[in-house]
Length: 121
Image (cartoon, rainbow, N blue to C red; front, side, top):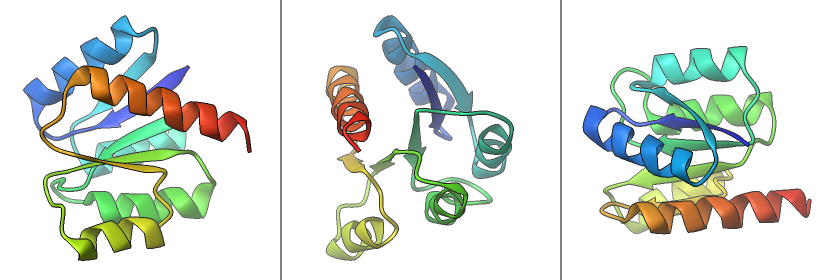
């Protein structure tokens, strides 16, 4: 399964990509929203893992664009847990929402859950 990880912290992106690769996912990494958009436009992904706080094109803006293109599952990563952000994610049809900090094992389990749910659609 091919996954796109859009995360602006290089060390975090490296660790998450390593953990996902070890769980047998093919992972492409974008370090900002603009590069994330380019990856999305040029490839097909079974899941997009998207940090909300990105330079340039932020995660909310990119999620809006993803939804205009189709229904690829999106798992949001965020440091903010306010009700406004959670509601915004629901309004933009995110498939799951993971609050930082988290463990790689939790991310992998959530990825599996989202992909399993998507196969049931």
